[in-house]
Length: 230
Image (cartoon, helix red, strand yellow):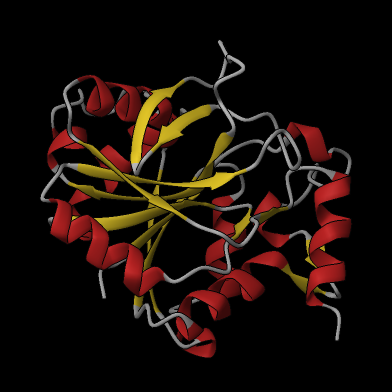
């Protein structure tokens, strides 16, 4: 399986005061830091190696997860440095340890999906990137993808239309080139990379039927705890 980059560098201001002294990845879910739940899910899904792209209080993440063996994974870390690099900027910095192709997910996302099938769809597409989408219809968050007959027709996190009934599920797969072309050490956003790939016909898509979970809000934390309860 391809390695996965976990984007865990944000300030998590929406969860203050929970995140005043810890990064979002270490917010407790059912008595355990969220990152532990996320890493075990990735291991159960067949992934073997993860790279944590850390920023805000990233040293605490490394201290908690270590080399990853306790969670069934091999873990590496890449740190933003004195200035936060944003989601795409962090991936640009992590390229030396990610290799030629890799998954990308957010450090606050719990995604129970078929990672192996998504990887196969990406490799079969021979495109530079793949976005997973979910038919959301405004339920879990604001829909931001127009998806029709297996293709993404439009994607925009800010200018949404009635035709957008799907949402970016939160898991992508990429070749290194879209990030290698970015200037090093400068902030950049993953949404910009997705839009550029779509514009150039280099963005494949995979529709996921199971809903996503996230801990970016108190409501999201409550829903994930309910999902993880026996």
